[in-house]
Length: 147
Image (tube, rainbow, N blue to C red; front, side, top):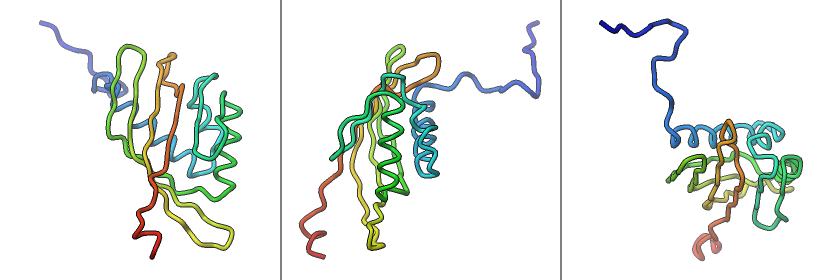
């Protein structure tokens, strides 16, 4: 009779599915950004990965991504929240779609909330790495501007 090996040091769960891995990695990215660990967040990108943020030039490569993330943080972006709404994958590629919210602290001390959508493309290069991350803000409604 076959009896599986059981050890307290072995994780009894099977390998995690791609969707769970991608969702967790996105949360790790947000945590790294929110804590000012821009090098750690940029390390989640492939060496030739691209970050494309609105109103900024694209950043290509980990060092350029780190500089852009630092620039965003220094200009008041904080409290990043990511909500993955869809993950599709095939082989060593995955695509993630989601919504984000962030707070932008202005020089006068006011806080302006922003929200929008994003697309991330992941490639498994031993571990999952971002090869492209692009996001755009949702324009505020006319009624929001009047308030």
